[in-house]
Image (cartoon, rainbow, N blue to C red; front, side, top):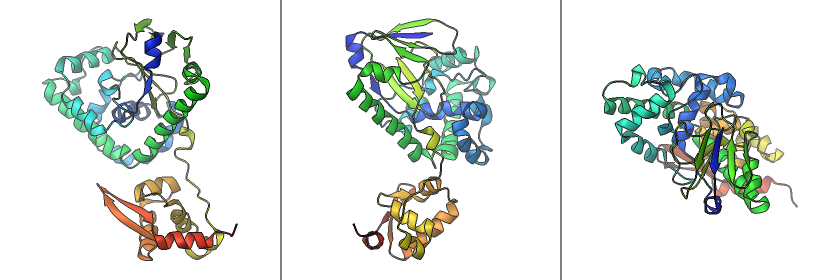
Length: 321
C-alpha cells in the first residue's frame, strides 16, 4: 500500500501531465507480457516485425518479472505537452549513481547489459529507447497522445462538475481518496506513506498500466493510471460520407476526404481507417492529383488537408437541410 498524504495546499496543487518517455518505458510491460494488456495486443502485433532488430538485451534490462521499471524511465512531466526529445536529453545526463541505484531498486543489481562504464551504458540505453520509439511509437503517437489528452480533459471536467475527490476516486478501483490521504493499492508488498509537503501530486494517464503505478522509490509524488478510451484506440474509424460522393470516389476515398477537414499524415490515416500504408498513399495521391486535397511537409511527415475544391464537392454532395 502506498499512501500520499495531502494537506489543503497539496490538494490545490494536484495536476496532470503526459510523458512520452513514461509511456515508452511502461510499454515494455506489454512487450514483455502481452497477455496482461489485451487492449494493446493490436499494437504489439503491428509493431512485432519492426521491433525484431532492436537492442533487446538493453531493453530487457529495464524491466523485471514483476513489471517494475526504474524510476528514471518515469520522469514527472513538467507540463501536459512534454516533448520526448527533452526527456531523452535529461536521461542522457542522468547521474551515474542515480542510474545504478534505480536499476538496483528494480533488479537487486545492475543487469549485465547495462554494467560497465556508466556513461557508455546510459548511451546504449538511450539509443535502444530511441530505436524502440521509432519502430513502435512514432507512427502511432499522434493517436495515442489524443487518447491521453482526451482523458486529461475528461478528468478536468470531472473536477469542475463533481470535485477533486470524485475524480480521484474514479481513476481506478485500486485508488481511493478520503480528503486527506490518497491510498494506492500496488503489487509492491511494501507499506509506504509519503507526505506531499508542497511538492504537488502529478497524475499521468497511460495505456500501459492495468491498475495504478507509482515510482518504485520515494521520488516526486506521481501516480500513473489507466487512460480511458483505450478500447477504441485500434478500431478502424468509420467516417460518415455522402452516398453520392462515395458513388463517385469510392467509400475509402470519400471517407478520407470527409475526414481531412483537419490535417493528418498518411500514417495516421492508415491507422485510423484500417488501411495499409501503401493503399492509403495511393488514395491520397489520387485525391491530391484531382485537386481535392493539398499537402505540405511538416518535419518528417507530409500532412494532407482538404482543399477548397474538395470542400465544395463534399458540401455539394450533402443533402439539403
